[in-house]
Length: 129
Image (tube, rainbow, N blue to C red; front, side, top):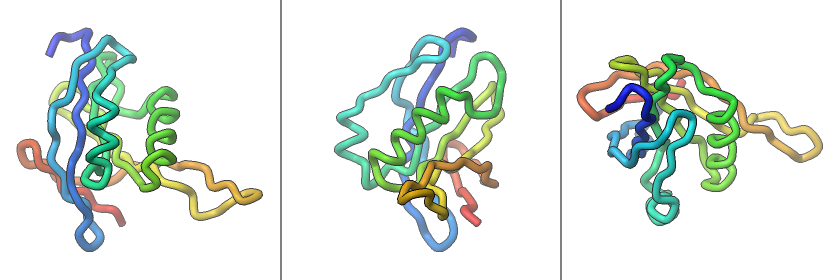
């Protein structure tokens, strides 16, 4: 991985009990603040996708405003909560984006919170509670 490139993985997996179990599958490389991947692949595999992970070459382990907008769009499009992993060097932080439990005038906004997880190689065990 070049220092000024951004890499992206799709996280495939499933929920079992109160945990999500997933595997990172490398998808693509892009420019800083912009990485594209195969939208058709996501649409065809939506049932098995629990989220996405990408690098932040600038070193920030928190989602950016662009990440917030992108993840909110994916949550609305796929109709389910999704994981957003942010990777900087060898460290990863995991966040979940999901629709809020409260609604205002029938609209439920998408909210984000950080989650605890364990990583073994490319496998993740994410604690949802």
